[in-house]
Length: 216
Image (cartoon, rainbow, N blue to C red; front, side, top):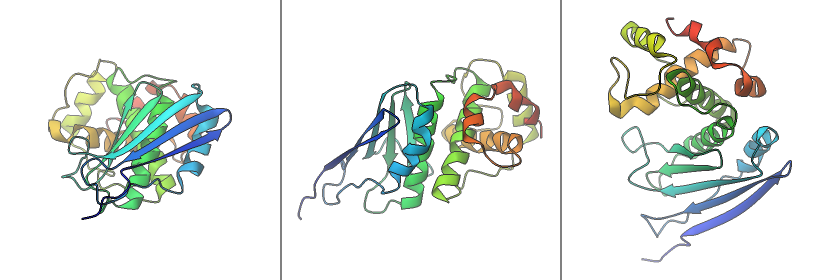
């Protein structure tokens, strides 16, 4: 069986901000990784709001970083300069889902320069705003968006809104925590921006402005 090129790299520059992109095939060396053609236009939307001048995006197949029973890619932010995208397999990855994960990851990385998600409210708003930005850019609605969400969960979040993140929420399994935060947070952000998602305002609106939507 032939071996494909295990890695590709790219550098994108916009508004004096540089994005270094590294895509790698770690598990399956027979399928070449690829960088979506739309990445440059996605980054161009976010670069004007970035405070760091050099950012890193890593996309790789892995057993550790996927969600939804290995069906969809996911993202992890490390500080305000690095974001990692994990996907189950390069050969079968859903391209719009990959673009969605990349968009959400880049958004979350930039937003951490404005508000670092230490507390429950900050974490939910960041995850939700990242998901809405991603849905708008990718034209793909993730299956964890849309609810419904239990009143027990809503009450727990309302009470703990300003508390440090500590485990999961009432009625939410730990294994579902990240997708729950993305889905519930998206509901809060969508209600706040009822006339349409505003990228700049989503980065700068105080987190407590979203709390009034928690109880439904």
